[in-house]
Structures are given as C-alpha cells and as structure tokens.
Length: 581
Ligand code: DHE
Image (cartoon, rainbow, N blue to C red):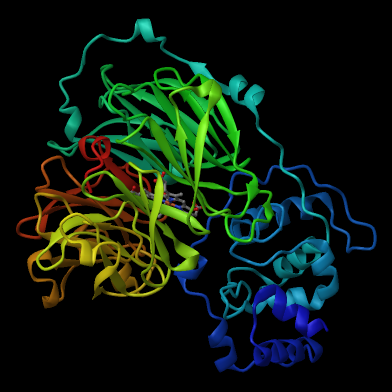
C-alpha cells in the first residue's frame, strides 16, 4: 500500500519504488549508483517556475499529530518550499507539474518515505535534492516534517492592496510633450540586472549605459508601449515600473504592485488603442490586472482560478504565464499555465469585460507571434507541445508536439528555403530545434506541423533568435550541464540548415575568466546587423554583454561595466515594440 502510494505521488516505476522503499527500510543501505543515476535531475529538469518572493507567510502552527516545527524552522522550510517546490507542486500543494502533496497524502507516506523521496527524486522529474547536494540531510528532514503539516495560505492581493501600492511619480500633465533626450530611442536596450533589482538602459550605438533604474526584484521582462515612449518592467515581486523614455534622462513615472509574484506585462497595441491600457499577470494570487497605460491606475482585477480545460476540475492557483497584445482586435492574449486556457481578453469595454477562453494545453509558458503577427505560438512545456492560436478568429489552430520541453522565448521567424515561413523553438530537455510551418495560405501542406528538426549543441536551451534582415539562427544553451556548452551559442545558416552549426565561444570572447559564464538570450539591434548576448555570472562575479557582428559572426564589442550585475533579458525598444523576432 505504502509503495503504491509512493509511486502514485512521484510517478516512480515499480522497481524503483521498491528499491527506494527498501532503501528506507534498511536505512543504512544506499541505492546502487546506477539507480541513483536514473534519478539525477538535469538543470533543465530543475528549471521550474519558482515562487521566491512569496514565503513571508504566517506559519499556520503545527498540525495535531504531525511533527512539530519551531517558527524559525517553519520560516526556513517555507523559503525552501517556495524556492524549490512550489513551482511544480503548487503553493497550496494541490499539484501542478508535480504531484499533490496535501497532508492527507503525505501522512500516508510517512516521514521516512518523504525523506527518501526528497533525497533521491524520481525519474519522472522530481529533482534529487539530497543526492545532488542541493539540500543537506537536515534540510531534507526539515522539509519532510514540513510536508506533514498543513501548507500556509499566502494572502490575497485584491484591488485595495493594489491601489494602496500605486504611485504616480510624475503626473501626465508634468511630462514632456516631445522627446527631450538626444537618444536614438528605437535602438535603446532595456537590460534586466537580475539580482540587483534594476534595469540598465544601454544605447545601441555607443554601447554605453545611459541610465540604471531601480525596479522590482529580478525583472522578468521589459515591454514597450505601441508608441515607443513608455517602457514597462515587471519584477518577480509583482512590482511594475512605468518608465518614460521621453524624459531626459528616462525616469520611472509610475509604480504599482499587482500581486505577490508575477512574470508578465504587456500594453495595448491595436490600432486606435495604442498606449491606452497595460496588463500584468501574476503567479500569486492567480490573477491579471488591467491598468491605465499612462498612469498604471488599476482598473480591473480578474482571477484565473477555475477549471482545467481537459478534466474540468477546479484548480486553486492557475498562474498567468506569457501575455501578448493582439494586432487584430482590442484584445490581450493571456496564457494560463495550470488550466491550459488561452484567454482573449477584450479591453474595449472594461466594465463589461468579454473574455474568450480557448482550450489549448496545460502548462503554458512562453511564446511569440508568427511573422504576420496573426498567429500566437506558445509552449505548453511540460506537455512537449506548442499551441497555436489565431488572434483574428480567436480559435485554437493546432497543438503540435515538438520535443522535450519547448522553450522558445518569443521564438524565431524566418523563411525556410523549402517550406516557406516558419517559426522555431529550441528545447530545455533535448538538443533539437523544431521548425514549424506558419503559412496556411501559400504553404498549406506544411502549415502547423514540424517541417524540420535541427540538432543543436545540447539540451538546456532557453532562447532562439533571428531577425528579418539576417540569415543566421542563434540557439543558446545556458542550462546545459557542460560549462563549455553553457557558455557558447550555436549558429545555423538559414540558407543551408543541413550544414549544421558553428559554435561561437561567447563566454570566452567576454574576456571574463571566472564563473560558468552562462550565455543567455540573444537580442538584435534595430537594423538586425548585430546581436547581443548576456554573459550571466553569479552576483559576486563579473558579467558582461557580448555584441556579435551578424554578417561575419565575429566579436564586435564587449560591454563590461561594474554596474552590469547579472544581466539576463535584453529588450531592444524597436524590436520589442514591433514584435520583431
Ligand atoms: Fe523566464 C520569459 C517564467 C526562469 C529569463 N519567463 C518568461 C515568460 C514567463 C517566464 C511566463 C514569458 C513572459 C511573457 O512573454 O509575457 N521564467 C519563468 C519561470 O516561471 C521560470 C521557469 C522560473 C521562475 O521562477 O521565474 C523562469 N527566466 C527564468 C530564468 O531563470 C531566466 C533565464 C533569468 C531570469 O531573469 O530569471 C529567465 N524569461 C527570461 C527572459 C524572458 C522570459 C529573458 C523573455 C525572453 C524574450 O525574449 O521575450
């Protein structure tokens, strides 16, 4: 019975469950190295949505009959749970990518089983937190005891709390009527300085930092208003900044906190609605918030709690993943991770909000438009699938199996020599790059299927990039366990994809000799003649941005600056504003 439950909770094979159960029964006996190997988690497997700013939650007190925890232990366990476990098992432990861990289930398993489990993980995807050295024996014991107690309930964050956090620092009538700086705004880059809670604005021509602005913690993305004047950033702590690029130097003109954890922000782009509204999506509480585009005044908070699209069961915390703005209707396209819905949120009449909920696939994450801007392709990563939505018809077009854990960022659009327009994604879980046909008009036979699969350097890829003026396709591999692969990128020739790839040793080019030098997220300049890569090191180490000449694929420039701490995402104003990727 116990063994059955153990398998049910973590998805182990019978043999593995047996060997683990025996390992527990005979505590001194360690599993064989080959069994341990089966449980090893790759960095790709550990790349899960964490919830690292939530854990300041009141301890609910020890459950009667459950192992006791001091307040200090509870707080420590809370922190570990939110950083490492909540992404898969859910804040309320009702299960998401991982299994449910509510106390009715964990009690059946018992303390020793939980400890073995956390220690060795499972081949089904549970990381081997102990045998990998990520958690100590004491921490594993603590987490097992924690799981036998009820989960804390993080607070809600509705309109009153959101409104209380809202500040307009420069009212609209005090802002300039025209651009005051001499900057070429279209070629400005907004760069996330992840661990300092800042963004750096870097001039695309001089490659100099123009301004470093304080933002929320670990800004996830920057997005541009349709006019190109306003830059929006969203921190993990759900703090939004509205930065006016017309002020000299650019400055935050409004701030707000839309929840406790968030990853996405976007602004209205439909003709006639430019710059009018902004929207941000939260991981916790599961909700999205529509705001005034010039002031961030919160206008509407909408919960995403509800039924899963397939089994139609209630899910208490469906997180908002990517959001894009439709070019075909006054709508935001909001993806909801756990329920698998893609919501077309019509902002024409906010008081009588119309939402079309499209059934897509569970575990939606990141994605982007095809080259026409009509179709939105988004990875349902834990389902190895890309979902395609037609934003003109508000309908699901296709679900396409691509590879293990697609992770496109916004993807890459180009014209394939044989199959016409395609959109590409790389993968976290394997070395492949899937090219999907996107032209149902002139290339109907190839539309919405994988027309070609390329082999890249390895798994652990996060982002892929090209530009309409380029014939290169770049694929990063920052989460590959091999440091050499993590610190380089592969580049394919779009005109001759069968030739294979060339490796660019970006980490080495940076001139930095310390750290893993993870190379992450290529971003083009405005005219597509150069591509920028972050060389992402630890907070205490030096990081850099390496600029590559796109035509020659040679090193063009290295940006090294004391202020460039943990640079990750980079967003060129023109390309972001016009959805060019
Ligand atoms: Fe991201 C995009 C969520 C970890 C850098 N990331 C996104 C999007 C989501 C998301 C939902 C799409 C936003 C949109 O388009 O509206 N990311 C998550 C996670 O849940 C996850 C797995 C873990 C977490 O707790 O955050 C995660 N992401 C990371 C990182 O570790 C990265 C590499 C570094 C960092 O800054 O945290 C990272 N994510 C990025 C970047 C983008 C992104 C740079 C935008 C790419 C683009 O080109 O559009």
